[in-house]
Length: 277
Image (tube, rainbow, N blue to C red):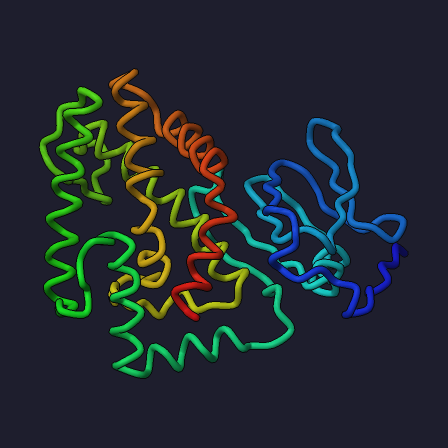
């Protein structure tokens, strides 16, 4: 029976010093020779230095043994189950912290009206760096944000030469949406999954938002909205400009390239810590 020896706590790398998340699909994770091994459907085999990985993102067609899950837990490495190309976030295992400090802090700030307003203002300040946000109410700032996004859609449509008729889509009848709305929705869903993985892996609570209050992941929406203009929106408009009939998969590929180029996997955690400091 394969045995994975639990490493001493003091030897484990902190989350900030670990590698970026690893995405795996169509294969099997198991423990072999005291290490976690990946066996791909394409016959690719390699060992994963599980104690130095920030998160394991498991996509479709992935099987993981009980021993491998235990090894990840022993190394304080979270495991997230997600959809194809990160399009959905289904569940996650452990968080890479040995305490619930961030969750307690998040809940404390959310419960304090003063703190909740302060953090919401800090989030808006990243959208409106030249505005004195303390002089505006949250309702006024939400209105400003709505106008900013509406103008941004129109500006991108003009810049990329894409016909823009407004943000309009129906989840229950996907085919009624035009291609640019489908592209934006697909990119947003993918980006939400990524942000959820980051929030959960840092030990924060995706259900407690400071600007957003509705939906299943308000805090994730708060964080994602900061970076949508340079990620999901650009990815969607660029692809549709080149091919009006492009599939969602092409949009997601472009989004992944933008995320990697702009190093958002390194930037977003720093932003969260700054907002919650």
